Image (cartoon, rainbow, N blue to C red; front, side, top):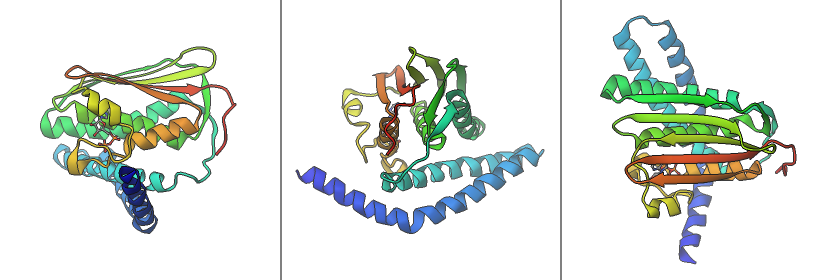
Length: 239
Ligand code: ADP
């Protein structure tokens, strides 16, 4: 149908665009991110430190947009999977998002209470960068949903002998039925110019390519819980 045609045309155009500029832009942003992180660690002047934190945080937003476009056009390339510790991956996603919530607090007084319950004792066979991207995407969405602050909880645990669960829960806006039905669709976004609508669609593809699945539970006005199920075993279809 027409909607599908428009979608695939958009995808094709996006793919070309990504090939041209996203890669170079990503490198530029990585440099800015790296050096602003070094500067943040070295500076003692709190005012300047705050400016740098804002640079870091905006850069992180930019990078996540560029990476979304890139990974969307890179869908079919081979991704190397190795045995990884899910808690390490979750920790590094949390670490990446930290400057953003610090920045929210320091510039807007918005407070996030972050609870980490990393209790899985298993390893998974995965591409750590992809799984980190998924967790980071969902954390950044959770923070966007908590405009006035709130609690972000990140859990990992072993569901049964074959499955690891990663949960990311927020006490934010929650979602209407309509949003819930569409949130994994490419280009679906309620964030206007600030959103690409690609984050969750990419995340779902990544999780599927790891033999897992994702669930969302959400109550408008109360918050949202994303549950990612990933297999512990090595029986994964390599792409
Ligand atoms: P983007 O963040 O660029 O809009 P996503 O694919 O990541 O794209 O998300 C799609 C939409 O799903 C968002 O625009 C938002 O409406 C909704 N959404 C995602 N996560 C949450 C959340 N934690 N709370 C409320 N709404 C959410």
